[in-house]
Length: 387
Image (cartoon, rainbow, N blue to C red; front, top):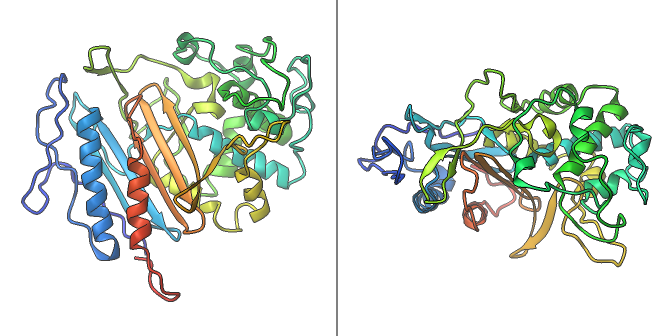
């Protein structure tokens, strides 16, 4: 049974109170406990070390609220919230607080593409116009695979104004109007250029290949089967229980409320809310054979190459690299008032997810260091328990 450690942010820990000081914010000088109790069991030392790293990170980078969860061999061994979901109300982050996950939305969407591929409804090497006939023909053909690997020449945001859009788009097709008339920046396959707009196009591919509206498809075929009960589209005009407030740093370093944005133009590229525990459910679904075929997961996780043979480090909705002898598959997500990171160590079956309610959390290598704490604490014997 999973051992989930819930935050009780207004109590002391073994007689100690960890203070979270956020300079320049009204009412932010109250002491806030960062942990419920000392870690227990095999991972006690890893949990205690992780809490210290998080404490230092939040203090140094003025992070209002943060949530983290770690799983080992499909079992959540630690899950905890830190700091505030709402600074004005001093509402604590809990393990069910919903954060903007930014571009990790691309990894979620990649699963929809993978499912349709397994069903024979999608050909990764077909031109995108096979599935989105309204998308204009370009100087060169571009395929679904190239778009998914950021080597199709589709542009990214042209300005901060596009990133900060605050108007409602009723459909995926309407969102495509922002960029579909633009020329490709290079011949597909020749260069790597990260593009959120490319993934907006892929949401239209999902709609046409499945015959279902994109958000409905994600809800019925990805989130519900995986029991991701806290993962939803970030509808700013709706009441979403547990949704955090969002913050940014002003030029003088003071924390302020993030500007209002509406991400309805980019659900697939960066428009979902989630929690670390939900993201671990999603990550662990890729480590078995019940949800996607192993060969399909390998397809998603294998970095693509440009025409001259250079590896891009990006497969289909996932980054892949080797770090200190481990294969690490990951995606980060930066959004207005949100910052998120999802790490998977497939060989060790360890996954970590961290979310924060500020645009730039400045995680650096902290998440990797925390993952290494749990990797070190893992059992080595063939019959040992994982927790």
